[in-house]
Each structure stands twice: as C-alpha cells, then as structure tokens.
Image 1 (cartoon, rainbow, N blue to C red):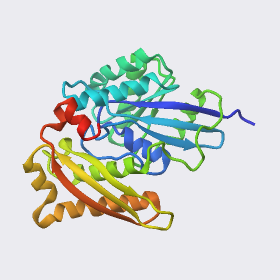
Image 2: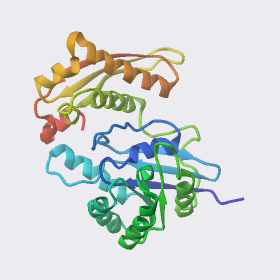
Image 3: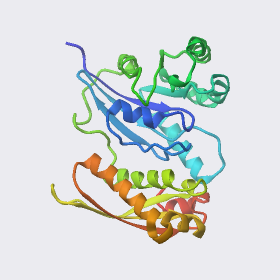
Length: 297
C-alpha cells in the first residue's frame, strides 16, 4: 500500500493567469471567485483536495504584482506569506502571449526562487497557444528555474489536471490527512458568501466599480438543516457615483447581484438562502490602512 501523503501547495502567479479557475477545477467545486478582471482574489483561500492516498492543501492567494496602493500592498503580502509557509509551490502562468508573459513572470520567478521550495509550473490556457510554440515555451521556463515539472493545462476544461496532480503528489511529504474527506476549505461559509457577492458586483458593473468594492457580512443565521440561511450584507464603495451604479434604476442592478450571489450560495450549501443587501459609501477606503480595517481587510 502506498504511503499516505499530505502537504500544502502554494499557488503563485501574476494577476489573472487563472489560479482560482484552476483551483476550482482541481477541487471539482467552486470556492474561489473568478472574473475576467485582474486582482479578483484579495485574500488567502485554502482548498482541500482529498485523494485515495493523499490530501493536497492548495493555498490560493492574490496575484504577485508591484503597487503602492494600500489594498494592493496587503494583497501582495498575503501572496508572499503563502510562499513562506508551504511544502510545494505551484506557479501558474498562461500561454496567451509567450514572449511578453515570460518577461512579466520574472518578478514571480524571483519570489519562487527566494522561498526555496520545490516548484511545479502549470502553463495555463494552452488552448490559446499554437502547438509549435509549446515546447519552446517549456524550454524557456525550464532555463529560468529548476522546476520539478512543467505541465501544460487548461483550467477551463480540465485538460492536463491529472498529470499536474500526479506531479504534485510526488513532492508532498508523508503524513496523515489534516481535514475530513468531505471538507473543501478552512474558510467559514460567511467568508465565501461575501466573496460570491463581490464577484457578482465585479461581473455586472462598469469598469470603475469593481476595484472599489468590499463586502461585509452583517448578519449570518444558519439554522439546522433544512432551515433557510439568512444573510444580511453591506457592499462598501468609494464614491456616491458608484453607489448609483450598483443599485441601478429602481434597484434593478442590486437585485440582479443579489439573485446571482444567492444562487451561488445555494449551489454550494445545498439549501435555501435568504439574502438582503445594502450599499454604503466609505470614501477612499482602499487607499488607507484605516479604511481597509474599517471594511474588514
């Protein structure tokens, strides 16, 4: 019988390379929000994958980037902390623009080198790459860092995920499972609920709104199943003009956001949810430490 393995895999990469989409695909369930906009992930999220002879604890974190904004600095700090507390690094890049992306990844590669952990590279979105370009791209990344393996994947359809999991399993230390087999994350449901709401704001509103959005859960009542879960949440924005956009004409946009977020919660929890949303302006919250603390970051 194979020795059981268990370890933490830190997911590292630039913003918008598909780390959260890949995490959801590997887990077979959505626990990390996904939008086409960069810097969607703002905090660490642990995803637990239990296999026959191993348990992989994936640490998804914000994309590694350079910024002077208070919110962005906290996001990058969260990403770097994950690298310092892992057994294996799973660096994720994408294949949309091989020449430019290789140069853009140098900052991430620098952080991966510095942490000193064994690393696997997942080249995501290979469906967008012409096949003759794949081997040269693998060779180029292999010269940048001594990856234990470089695996082409497509997070959208799952192509390559079995090979990726096999490579990660080989690098995990021996040990017992740390979470029950049916547990997907260490994050409380109220955190996932706030993330689903923020995701819908980012997806449905104009370009000027998403990065100024924070969501606080004001009330979360979870009776014994099959009772309805009651959630009251506040969407915090930076400017009054953004509040008008999020509420929409006659409250139509806020209703759309609430309905879509509620459906995501019900799919995850397997039971009915009653969701009530409010919108509040906290001017400049994302630009100061005081503002970040006020909205829960």
